[in-house]
Image (tube, rainbow, N blue to C red; front, side):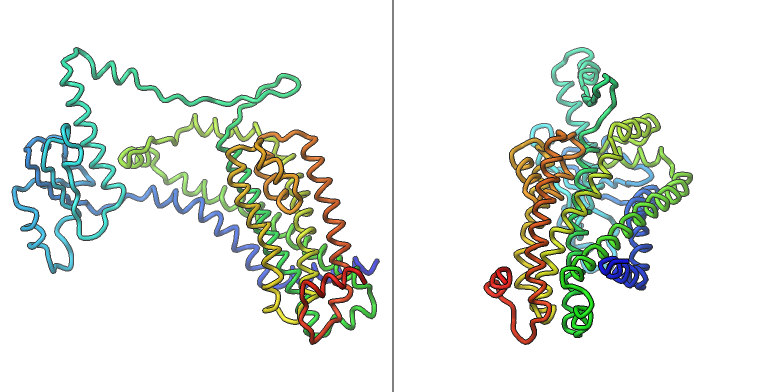
Length: 438
């Protein structure tokens, strides 16, 4: 077995067997599954507490509009606002949730309604009351035109246009696509690569610094070349990252499926639709739309995306990990790495912002050039891939990334070779430039 293979095995086994790795590997999918499942479960739980709204209607026109139901109780009173405030001042709990004052005709003055409360009212309450009043005022205005069946004509004229997107292949086969799903898939992939580069690149730098400060590296250098040590460490940690990512995907899918089937049996779809409509949103949970979602998912070439994800993850990680390793070899403590790591972090941070803007125009100049520049391409290209990037652009982007990785590895190796045995002297950019010429 080669020396690099031994170093890779050492880095991989020592990190995979750590308690922190095992806990994080199994805990993270639970958190991901919880983020998906808990909101669905909570949305299915009805709030048993009724909301009491006191209404002061100066026009005496809205008592038939604001009707009480199982959730909201409207109590019309004829008192000044200040008196109601004073009656409830100093009480631990108010007798009502909010106070609604309608001071004039809303058809003539839409701002004639004001909602008072001791603490900030929630969006659901405000949206529900606004929806009832808006609908009533709209009916009043339509009735003022004195046109027979005008309301029915207006209702029939309302149209919600949802334009489906269909992709066809070289053989003419059609597949249903989705701009929204492409955006979600691209942004999630870009963020995962961004996160992994930062986490595991920092681990490479931290590992180099720890070995250097503990003088273990002096023993290791007597048996292996510095370049072999650096490459073994970089590749070993990359394998740790891929292992953890694969475990996350498998466990997240398994847990989400299990929790979803468990919660799905107890969710009342009708109640969810009523809750969404009450909040002013159209309910969209129905079997036909679920089938449409799966049809859209089939429109994406996930195998291609996964393969390119691994390639860009490895390329981006190896590029930055070699630079992080060089920085770690140039300092004597982890506190000294901050001045060197910031310039390395700026391109990564810029890449995630470029990815966000590139998602809006995946074929624009910003998206194209940032997917070619090797320091940003692993993140930006992942946003573009679901939008069917031309093959020549992918090949060109990967080629530039590989060539740049080879170049940065060569440079990092020269810095690492000198800096790993340099003690007692703080490394500077000037010193690192000298080490490159040795």
